[in-house]
Length: 446
Ligand SMILES: Cc1ncc(COP(=O)(O)O)c(C=O)c1O
Image 1 (cartoon, protein in one colour):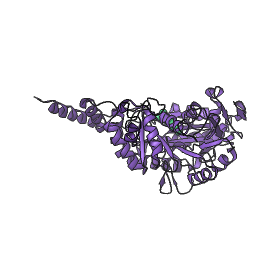
Image 2 (tube, protein in one colour):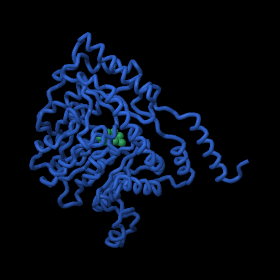
Image 3 (cartoon, helix red, strand yellow):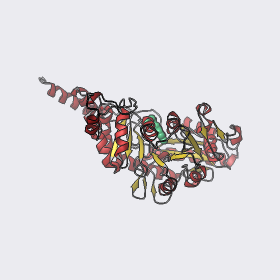
Image 4 (cartoon, protein in one colour):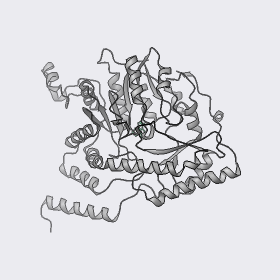
């Protein structure tokens, strides 16, 4: 018989461990899902401990997770928020805050790739700036330094490289351009935890970098995000206020500011315009457990990607597979395929063949974002055609890369793709989707 609350909690904990020894709930019944579930006994117990502690709003766990994340990445400060999208919104809000004399102002331009997740771009508009979409490279699927240079105008104030699907951008060159033109750099690393340029992790080049811990990412807090600040406390203090109503708490300059406004209660002192983008203790408790496992998850993802690339080498006449630049470590968020011009089949036929075999597919993120209906309602510019982005939009798809899949599953996926490419190669059936079936992109749109 359990007599004390601690005894009862220990018994529940034991039962949770017993449960996970017999079962791990899956995210999908598919043979090759887009996403797998990595939440296990330790995460469940960590959540229970928080709930039973009574301290359930943002507090100690969030602070510990932020410190652990800063150590992992090698940056000075990290601020946790409730999603990667919120991280991007807060980072842009930091650049554009009216509290700085030289902040970004309405109408200023920020350069972003045309192929990314929409909430890389929407925050630029939400702070009154204009996103300038640039085309991506057909092999890396990333925006190139060449395209960035071409897109710079006197109104350009920042660039936002996105390390697409775990593939690092050419950050050495991006930073050189930023230095030459005095531009801010925010790295969107929401899909690139653990990716590196040589030995340097992505997320440590720009002034700020953003990460997502949504369920399908390299590690998860279910929902959650982080903004990391390379060194400048000005940004981290701003982010701490702006994530939480604009108030003073947690800032390193709290005492100084409290003295300046000594007549007010400093617990209720609001020093910047703010939002409420706070995470919960529950998310951070899961994050602390997952962060310890992430290096192993990333190793498994990267190995799996290599196996897929090797297994599909003889399909490369028909399929373009994403490549990293020499010396870069790709941390394998997902596995994209884009039909080459001479592919003797359509993207939709390949997609249907994979789905029929229990292999989940999806488009390459938002495709060419300029084609998305939302972009009819927001200001944006492009200073060149977005040809590769269009190609990816019309002829690309991707499948999942997840830790914990078996060699048999991997063999099955490779064989199913190879069989399809071989068969349609012989029949010379109808070719890929023609790009002109999409609308012509506007050169500029405001
Ligand atoms: C490149 C990129 N940026 C931002 C986000 C937004 O992250 P979240 O889904 O956590 O809001 C994502 C989501 O996957 C993403 O892939």
